[in-house]
Image (tube, rainbow, N blue to C red):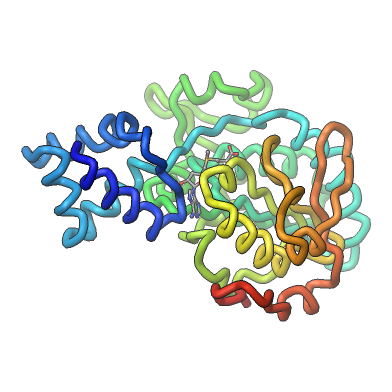
Length: 289
Ligand SMILES: C[S@@+](CC[C@H](N)C(=O)[O-])C[C@H]1O[C@@H](n2cnc3c(N)ncnc32)[C@H](O)[C@@H]1O
């Protein structure tokens, strides 16, 4: 791949997903795009120049370039904190309407959303409704969430044997999520760098292991706008290496950190209506509804 090919590919990925591909990642790009280029019988540079005019191939390339690493109950502690700290608090706070809403933002192939669905199946009292919204910029990943099918290798990554038996059925060599969990999860295509239109607020938002792929301006912008979508008494969970520490002061001041067991959750400082109408002076991105 030529330097120019890499540069124009990196610019495309950044424009479409906000993900930053720094020089030095040429080997990764080549490994992921070579099968697509080979299928069309062209070299990598020709393939990259084709992406500007071929939306179908562009979608395939972007799907191939997003990093979808995930696993069941990833890192364990956030799920323990969810069950032991967040869920009891939400159950007490929402006792009148008996509905809990969760957003798995950057859901990858759905392990995060379905891990939460399993915990809700076990711990939600009768008469409650659970809604889990799973969003991602990759349409291929959203299709995987909808299909709810996982290979044996994927199941081996964190799925407890008791939950495997309880929540999955065999589908050939794969495993399929049972309908009652799938009914809890709905999907929507969403680029976190775009406005969050019509999303409303959620009791718990999981925004895990995705901010690491963005530059500082994009991270700050997302955390600013995200604050309009976490209920006043709700929780935002970031990945283990992600934090609001070191963010511009207008962003850091929107969140307070709370230690829940071994996890630091982020909680809104202001009530949602105040936050969602807040327009940061330096942001050029529209604030989501
Ligand atoms: C490493 S996975 C993390 C999955 C899951 N949250 C977890 O922690 O296991 C990152 C996901 O972020 C998605 N992603 C990357 N850029 C995105 C963007 N701009 N908007 C929404 N999702 C994005 C990728 O498609 C990928 O599925």
